[in-house]
Amino acid sequence: MERSRIVGTGHFLPEKIQTNKEIEAFCDTTDEWIVQRTGIRQRHRVAEGEGSSDIAAPATLNALEAAGMEPQDIDLLLCCTTTPDQIVPATACRVQEMIGATNAAAMDLNAACSGFIYGISTADAFIKTGQAKNVAIVGTEVTGNRLSWERRDTAVLFGDGAGAAILTGSENGRGVLTSHLWCDGSGLEMLWYPGGGSKIPVTHDNLDDFDIHAVQMNGQGVFRRAVGDFSGAIEKALDSAGFSIDDVDIMVPHQANTRIINAVAQKVGLPEEKCVVNMDRVGNLIAGSIPVALDEAVRDGRIKEGALVLIAGFGAGLTWGSALIRW
Ligand code: UT7
Image (cartoon, rainbow, N blue to C red):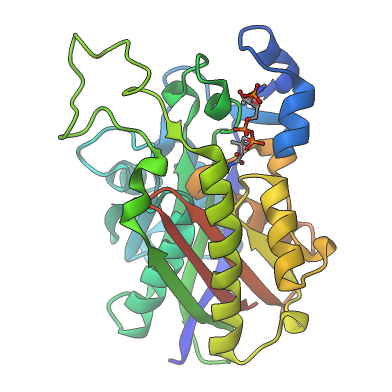
């Protein structure tokens, strides 16, 4: 076996839509600000009581159907999420049960917005070393109940949604050509959710403290790092596989801000029309962003057999990564 290949993609977005205009009613923000500064117009929201597994399961089944496989064919299920159903056990265990992937080992992977790329790299390694035959990766996030509307700089950004991909071995030259991952833990506090873990547990006293129980982000700092590191990750992918930017048919970037995507595209010399952008409709889906955008582009025919597909992302950790895929 030469490499691993994506043989099916899928996604699931909850029915309920929350527009910028609706948010104006209870948050100190405007539709105009959100659109101009981020490109986001609306996001999807799960129904009350639903968690990340509830949207991961249909997304994974959707990808399995596209791959022509049964849940029992999967032997590794990777659930990439920053919003697990619960701390223990992994959300992947619940998804495994929900879809009936009875032969699959299952684990969560938290690399924030780079989660799907970390997932691709992990799946690729498992398949190439023969540790797994078929791997399902699902990036899934339910962000609505982790946001504080008192914190307008982050609350307007994130949506709920899940996207999935099925990988298997390939002998025909198609598949994952390269994947590269990076982390800079010194930037941890540039984008983080401090509370609820072992270091700063939830207590009666800190329950209402938004500095602990809301996403904290140095927006401008993350923006600058994202443009630089994103571009570096793309250049590394192209160099290591012996391609130039002109060889790339389509890029599916992480969807944090249209201004970031445009700046990266300009920096690496990729025409904007080759960039898949869906955040206007779905917002930032963290680990779900890339797989949802990827599946949309596959299903609407923008990604065709033989295309050179570039995926790249940047996010909390700080983590970032890229992968080149011959579709
Ligand atoms: O997905 C993981 C990685 N995340 C990212 O890559 C996000 C990177 N950062 C960004 O996308 C941008 O920094 C943001 C969209 C988060 C913010 O945009 P910005 O252009 O960097 O705004 P800013 O933080 O510099 O704030 C500009 C102004 C401030 O007001 P003053 O001080 O100029 O009066 C903010 O208080 O915008 C204000 N502001 C808002 N106004 C209306 C911040 N958030 C909002 C809001 N509505 N939601």
